[in-house]
Length: 65
Image (cartoon, rainbow, N blue to C red):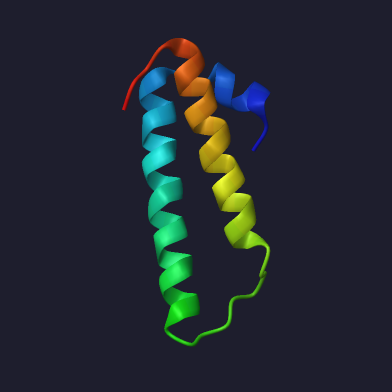
């Protein structure tokens, strides 16, 4: 996900996307901890970066969570 795409979203869409990413990260981490292997080991890092990008875009708007 690129910053241009995120900045074009409305505040509500950004918040919704943030919740989706946090839930996905939780699901992937749970899968790894339960002993399962994930298809792409770099997915955790990618999700964390996307979360950081969305949070940055929200901070730029002045949103405080």
